[in-house]
Length: 183
Image 1 (cartoon, rainbow, N blue to C red):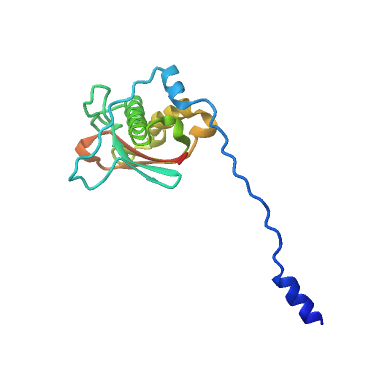
Image 2: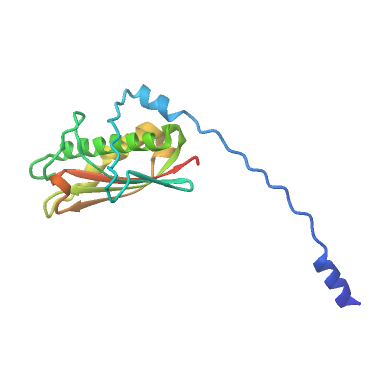
């Protein structure tokens, strides 16, 4: 009798709890914030049809942004080794320019920066000589831009800042990033 009661109890389906999903609207539209900061994003460039990479890959709720190299507002490459040909302040400006280019690529891919929920991870690479120790201060140029644009809660992500012996075309800085987005 006990076995039959246990089997019956196991076979009786229990009611499933109702799950509701609410999408919380994102505070402070990012596009409005970009305008308030009077930021001019560069024209996003898309790799050509024979390229072996793409600027942004969206997978689920993440946007992976390829490395963006340092270019001035006029499009010219910012080149040289930080700590030799360039100062830390110049390297920081180069990192900020990388951040602006990343935002431009995100906008092109997503249609609007308002779809960005938060910065997840930033990897900044600094072209510098051996013994140079100020890579974090250089990459702050990009990180501070993201904080200005997205605010502390959404703009502060994990980060790595590393020194490298060289970068493509002798550019000063290259930055890649990962963002959580609204799918």
